[in-house]
Length: 216
Length: 217
Image 1: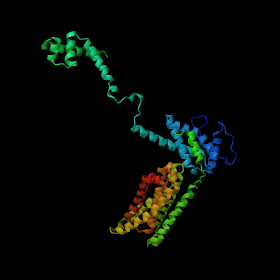
Image 2: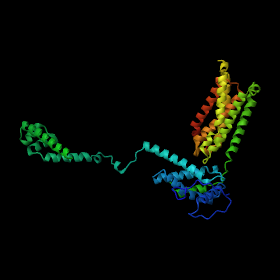
Image 3: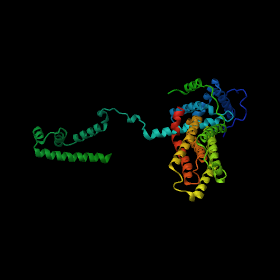
Image 4: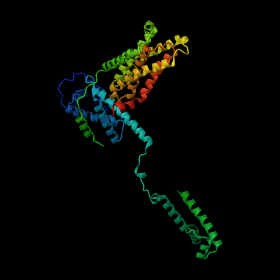
């Protein structure tokens, strides 16, 4: 694997003894040399050297982030995983044997935490629904009646299109819910004429809505 | 949520010197030494089976005993190896040949000794005694394994649990063969394989829960 491919090259074996002085840090170091550094830092950290430990953790964090980024898209999940790996590295740092390469040790731990993270994600996805802006509403019933309100407007427009006799009959008998007698008294029409007008009005309304339904 | 640089600072502040783990073989040897001590204590308090001298002359018995002991030892080594994060999981196969030999000696013993089984060959008291031996060997060995492998809680606990359980089961079974004359009967099969399967099953099932008690995260 060349060092230019995606992800950190962490599979190299440190062959030289970790006794040489710490080489200068630079971003262009060869992976083998870098990994040897990590091995030396960890060996010192196991002895309680805090500077070496800080350097090690700061150095490996970008690599852990790139490992996590292969599995998670959300930056929060990536950072969570990185932190979990760092915590695990801290808790099991005594299991590292400086005679062995550092990369595989770190990658094995990182993979464990990535798998844990994926399982957690799977569980939460199976049981939770992400609440998007479109799902937000107010508890009051008026806030949720947008459709009903537009239906009412369409009906009123349709009633306005009716001939005057039918319009009045519908308004009085259906919208104002008057009885036939009250409507007859109010309009001066006979009960029979009101009945006929209402019947024709409903027929016309049905026709109007049928036309609109066919159009849309 | 704490930021990663802050987390690193807090980890660095907490970086006390730690003692590296000894090599897996050395740790397995330590555990086997502990097992030897337990079995010796039991031998002193309980006494070995009366016909042990005669049985040690039988190749089948000796092979079975050696195979179960070897299975225990190799499974212990495998448990300590796979508990390390960077070792291959294939180390789990290390005790497989010895395990196969052990199981086949039990099977062979069963086949050849089948005729000799009498319904009253195993009494209830004897079975209870067997069970006591099993508990007295396996519980301390389990606890020792748990303590020595407590760091695994954060790593491959299931893989290590299988190997550790097999080690405990094999050593307990070796102790059974030394203390009780249950072999060459279907009881052997029940005791050895049954308890081995039970221990492996229980161990794998409760491993994580026991860790929360031994090594709180």
